[in-house]
Image (cartoon, rainbow, N blue to C red; front, side):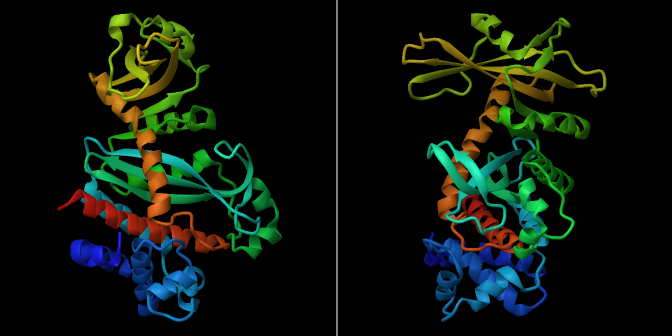
Length: 375
């Protein structure tokens, strides 16, 4: 998206968003630079950093843009909250709104940036230096946007106080694992009044199953991937592991929701579970089962996936399957956003600077979501 597109197609929309967040800046200079920063991100710069953004703004040195990310006084979390509320007004939908937490590994060449640690990269097939950002997406029938972000800090970083102090990690910051970071962001979205129908997670091996008890207490519906060894209790009061239920589903119960292209046939079925004693009336718990069969003729061995579901009574399996597919859709969109917004193309090392850069990228992404959704 170029600056010409901003002027011809969405200038008024962007002006509305920037005016909304403008109150979060104590002075006119950082307020103006923040607007230039967002427009620079939207202009398609190959690598948004102090120099390229300064050049885009017509300046001959990067000091001003660097101050915006380091020492200028502005409320970065307030901007985040404003962007989230603005997205809710633009693409929010109480029937289809889904919250999806996603982890993003950002490769770094050195180890001086805040939070960098060694982690196995499946795509590269080797250990890499990475920062891990935990992001929260909002997806509805009207569009998609990133609405929150947290930087994961391994325990080693918090234990080395000198190292943490050098990159601006706040004193007293306590360790939070990735699930705790995701839970905090989901809580902010719910408390902020975002129209949410579902929370969807499909990473059972990363501990996200812990979200279920918290969502139960909040009364939020969800589709959360189950590990094969998770215990469940069927409506017949039979205690089993989820892996034992997929092969027992009768043939007529399988439905192709949604239809899938390519060489993998995907079908879905629901197994009613016992409703916990503490549950409110009108809520059902279901084990959603996904069956995949390799080959165009769908005659190969089946692979199963499982999801814990909390939903209103009578919710169709098609709806649960759609929500179960939301994390896949979000991952594809986040990958595009990494390029489109320069989400991971920055040259900042300090804790506060990371949050400021990413938050301004969220604002740029919110503008794109609003323009794509239309009036």
